[in-house]
Length: 307
Image 1 (cartoon, rainbow, N blue to C red):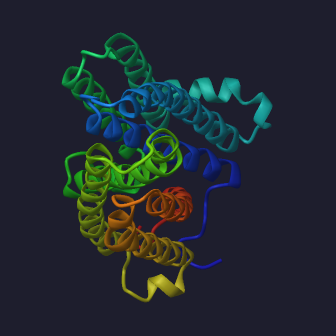
Image 2 (image 1 turned 180 degrees about the horizontal axis):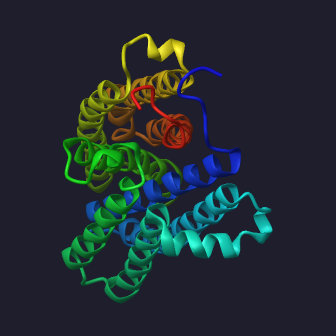
């Protein structure tokens, strides 16, 4: 294979992709909880309860997938059968930077579970939001320490940009996942006609996604400049091919999001049929973004041309 050869096995990529997707789900749930922090209608209160359960499930899946990634990595590095990897996994967690970062992320996720359990009350409001958000920022920081940017030292612009890119990608994907598969279908089933509360949720969703996307494009451009030796790397090496595929998927998701913003959301604020259209487009967009997260998992386990 060419320079930038894919180094991760399929199980490693799958575990990392599951971490990416579950973390995005958690961030999307938190964003939706923020928009519904003072629920005034029956559907908002019901949706807030669903989001509470979705947060618990997301945290469990994210923690399990991080442990799965540690287990799989130790199996590959130790050259042992997957089912026999516990001794190698324990050594890796105790003695390697990768293991320390994974353990830190696991501890932070457990702390987030405890905070969610203790603070998730109707009157918690911003105390809950701030506490969970702070812990998730630290989880993202722990994840970034095993990335390519960290290899040149912790206090670099590249590390900060990579951390920001990870968070913003989680915001965008998470908003789409949660809105398209959880909140808006619930609105459609429980609200007979468009309302101001529906409009407020849709506006928040659209504005946050647009802001996240703008910063994603900027941070992604910086990351590409940092890891590629020339534009030809996009077509000449495997790493660049995957990055180009990821960029194409981002453009598809952008087009779908743009359609919803310009056409779908005004229709959803006017009719139930319009809301159904928005949900359908969001679900297609969610598939594109899931593929983006899988591509990101492949890139995370691949050697950039610049290294």
